[in-house]
Image (cartoon, rainbow, N blue to C red; front, side, top):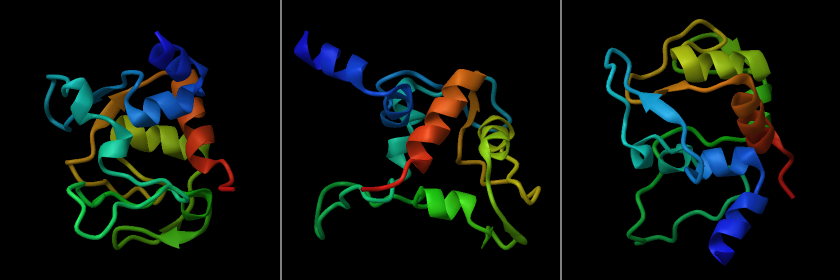
Length: 132
């Protein structure tokens, strides 16, 4: 009961990022949803300011880009395309369609998500909050 209460106290964006609240994820071109544990953001991305796995750790090193306010909101060249920056709309578009702000298609291994506006906004706010 205590663990459930602690999870409920976390913001929606934190729960979505960690997979404590389900996001329906799909691989592009497939209609079958991924298992809940396979579509968690935390599986592939590290948040700026989060502890990194120690050298020699059994944890897998993140292969998705580091997520930070500066990295998303700043003008940055991405995936061989022109420099671009994210805002809430572009971030939600990427998660739903796999197309980034510069109109570059992300890798197929990144799930596409079925999420509503409140979920996407909560995830955006959580990921782009200033790091302490």
